[in-house]
Image 1: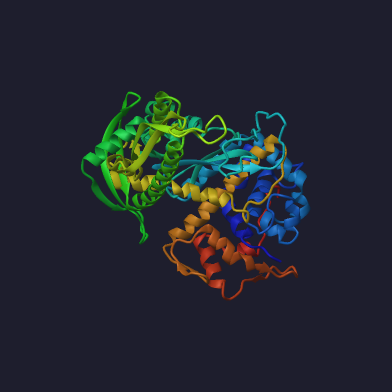
Image 2: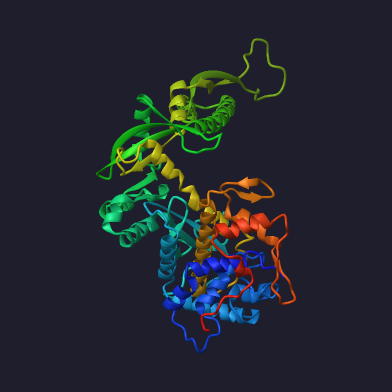
Length: 544
């Protein structure tokens, strides 16, 4: 029977003390439960790593594997029916799951000696099918329409947020209503950070966030909490255009590349300062070689389309007859308003238009044909306005980071490197959306939806621990597809190695791993600090 990565994940959950922390914070009666809430939630987390529909009718998935190895000694698939799992979600929802998750994250951070000086925050949406019209209670979450990061505005959703370090290792997370705005949520995140860290830690840590962080209330909240930050200044701020103009009028500093790839972009930086909302900030303008090429290509297409539209408008305008000069000049002015990046001219001229005779027959000799005076516009597109085009090209090829970190502590290179680490959390969200990891699930109660969101965050945490441990070994992971890999991803390990890990069906629990995968399998267990005996001996249950 197949066991996949189940025992490995269960072992990591035990090291993180997932079960005892949940059982301690979620009240339950040992005499009435065969499996504790912690064991049931841990089973959900483990099943997310199996190649099954993990959160829908879990007991069916466990019938094709060794249930005792994944859940505990004496456990059967029937013990994880939908009712039992639903009750476990109810208890997790009632136990303030944000605090439960924070406690497990704190345990993981200490166990893994995680660097908490650099904080990154990001959010993603998780779409749901169904109506979810029930009124939300204090333990629930509002499943509703909002800004869909899945590009499915037709579906209702909830939002998942993670506060992590530069590696993308989760340190805190929360599940919120589906219509929560990132801009308003950032203020609450600032408050959470101020509560979670001591004043000494706040003086040394740096919070990195996307451009949604930069709003008046958020900047004021960060200033009040003495929270240092790095973010991207939105183009809607006038200061962005001002410092970009100063940068192009001055000199640039070559800071090289911030990534190790051969095709990585090279950057130049310009240090600037500006006052926003009555507070002075350090603003650093960056030029990217790749961004310049990409933006230049897109801008060139935009210029071509704009000229084409202008020429079509000029042709249509030249064919119109106006009864008076004022109407013609008004139409010419309206066309000139769309000049954009091009130099255009328009003039009004009088034209005699021949009319049809109002009576039949041959006109007498010497009779002039009837005519009337009309006004026409002669519009011409002469070329691009070079100065305006160059200014716009410069503006588009740069971006601005806003920070309260002094230059002496982090120069432009370090600042950009830290901001680029924001992508580490986005990769975690990509994992949460992978259908092979988290497939369809069906829960209707808002309380269970909220608890289920924290289960997904736990899955993300366990995944991060596994990946981090493997990358810290310093030894390349031997793989069949790509040979030795220095920085293996968690998905690469789970998909390509454990799919063929099986146990004998005769009850002996004899482990079978194909010879070609044995080096990879052994290296992953060693790097994850999990003994192979976890594939042979079921763990004890909390009620034993």
